[in-house]
Image (spheres, each protein chain N blue to C red):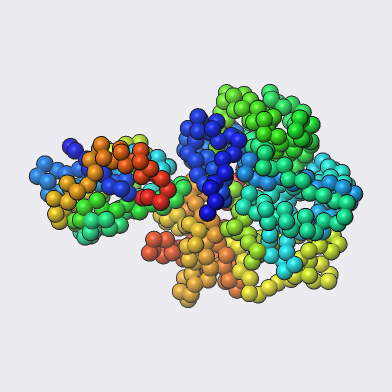
Length: 132
Length: 373
C-alpha cells in the first residue's frame, strides 16, 4: 500500500476504499526519537484536524508529538505498542504503526509527499533540528 | 548564535555512526547505538565518552593551592597531592558559578576541570581573583578529553596505559607528553569506577582509539551525551544549568558535603555559613528533591510539581528521565523549602506531564543501587 509522508516525519497509508488511514513514523524519525519507552495513544473517537497532535512518543531522550497527516476521527490505536514499545524502533513502517483514522477528506492524501519527495526533503536538510 | 565548534574527535565519531548534536556550542555525539544499550554497557562492562568540550585550566605559581581554595566551597588544603576534589565555584552571594573538579599536584600546581558552558566565565572569574605570581593557563581549545567508565575499565586500561591503573579512587597524575602534560584521574560522572584523560589533542586521541579497540572484547561501547546524562541522573548528580545556577547554593542542591565548615574564608562563605560554620538557611530558596513517578510518565525539565492536598504549585522539575533500574520515570525538582520536608515524609504530590497530573513519591539519591555506593 502506498505511503505518503509529512514534513514532521509521519507516514500514512490508506485502506482499499480510501476511507481510512493508518499512521506511523518514518525510519528517520524512529532514529531521531531513539529508544521508545512508551506511546500515549489517542482516545478512540477523538477528532483530530490535519496537522493536529494525535499521540505522544516518550523516548529515553525526550517526548515527541505525533501529528495527524490528514484530518479524521481516531478509530484504533496500536495496542501492541503498550506491551512492546520497541516495535516502533524495530518496524516503524509496519508493526510499529501508531493509530488509524476515519478520514474527513480522503483527497488530502494527494497533498502529502510521496516517497521520492520525502527522500528529497530529507536530503535537503528537512531532517535538521527544528522539524518534527 | 555563533557557529558550533567541531572537536578533534568529530570526524572519528561520524565514521563510528555517532548522532551529533549541538551541546552548548560544541558538536558532540548524543549517542552511537542506543542510549539504553550505552547506559547498560557502562553499568555492566565499560563505556567511552568524548568530553573534549570540558575546560581544563592549569593554575601555577607560588601559593596556587591557597588561591584556588579561596574560590572553592570545599577544602583543597585538606587534600593530599595527587588527589582530586569536587567543589563549587561560588560567587559573593553564595550562588554557584560552576561546579568543578580540582586536582592538587603540589602547593604550586592545581589543575581544574570545568563545565563547557562556563569555561569562559570561569576563566575570567578565576583569573581576576588570582594573586600576583599565580597564573592560569587554558590548554582546552586544542585538547582532547575522554572518560572511560564502567566496572571493566581497569582491565581495559591496563592494556593501554598501565601507569594510570594503579591510581586510587580520586587519584590523579600528570603524564608528560609533547605539547603539554596529560591529566589522568580515577574519577567520573557515572557512579562507576573509571578514568578521565585530558591533554594534547594528538596524544590523547591516540589513547582514545587504543581504548576503543582494546575495550571491544570487554564489551566496551562508545557512548554519547544521552547516556552520560541518564547515568549521572541515576546517581542524582547535578548538571550545571539545571540543578545548579547562580541562583542556587550548594545547600539548595543537596551538596552540603562540598561545603567545608572547617576551612578559612572563601568567596561566598558569609552567605553560606554563620560565624560558627553552621549552614545558613535562606527561606526563599527552594530545595532539590529526588522523586519517582507512580504510573506511566516521564518527567522532563520544567514540568510543574504541585502539592496533592492543596493543589498549589510547589516546585519545578530540573532534570527527568526514564530508567528501569531507577524504577521508571524519575527526576530531580526544586520545591519550596516548606514543602520539601513534608514531601520527604510522604506528603502526596503531583507532576504535570502532557496535561496530566501524575502522582510522585520522594526518593533518596542515588536512585539506583550498585556502582561505587
